[in-house]
Image (tube, rainbow, N blue to C red; front, top):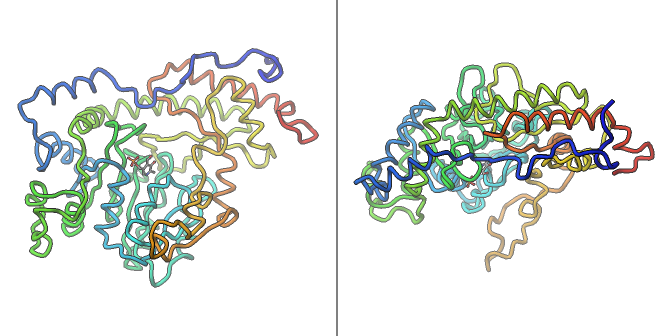
Length: 426
Ligand SMILES: Cc1ncc(COP(=O)(O)O)c(C=O)c1O
């Protein structure tokens, strides 16, 4: 017999002091990398493609089997560079998942382009290709796709749809560095692949990002939007674009060299970091599977999740349990979990619901943008309604991870108390 639930006065299942996730888990090796850069006699990597910046770009390009890599100062700016390079113009439509972090899509507004949101697969939460096909119009120029929480999207089919309609395919690999689908790495398929190297990402340098590609024209355009002089003179060769190399095209997207040092140090230990995360999340999955109610994230055959950037368990819809009281009960047990994952789909956010942004005298910022409402994407909404977001364990003791699993088992074994027969909640 398990002890009473915490919300009924029983002992909390997890008593570790907060916060429970040391999400980036920087180590002495990261500190050493910063010091090595500071003490090197090579204070470059500011304007040119040289020093540790060039070294790291070469590593990333080769890891993803791509010809070019450009480091940027954020994942958001990597995506802006990619959309710019892809030639997205005002009024162009870009099909994008509604279930993604907003920065996968928001740089499109800066180009006056029209994000056309599409629904999600019910199990993985990734972009639903059937809905992508329904959203194609003669104004569609590109598809952008995220690999949610490390699970690669259906890249073979998306590649086929993009190629057969003459569209650019842009991958947002921010949550899936190192992920593999049937032997193919996420980030190696799209015309351009972008990723964040900032905040809580596995390869975080504090802030940073990158984009990779094979096409020299895309590379030149993506360089010129955020880099002037040194780097642009080194890499922009086509006569049309080279005439602007001294100034670039207006933005500064250069990554801070200290961030490069830390991010590269983590890249060089990536196997170890991925293994640490996989070990913890696989153990958690084992324990959740025994609850019979809270399923681990769905992982399809042939998939390896790489950085596992996010762990959202799913409450079985047929169990008929409301997510809020369940998550409340888990929180009372001491777990740092959140209902509906880490964020809502984009169509719940105001930016995607109104044209009246008041940002310009001549009208809305992206004049043709579409507006959405809750209810527009039933599969994404149903998926998100089942999600419980867990901490991003990385170097935490296995004992803590197991305490989370056992706490879920405890609450699952007393579900009748969590959701009172009257439908009342805790
Ligand atoms: C899927 C996804 N895309 C893009 C970004 C933006 O990256 P950054 O924060 O480095 O600008 C993030 C950041 O969390 C993300 O999760």
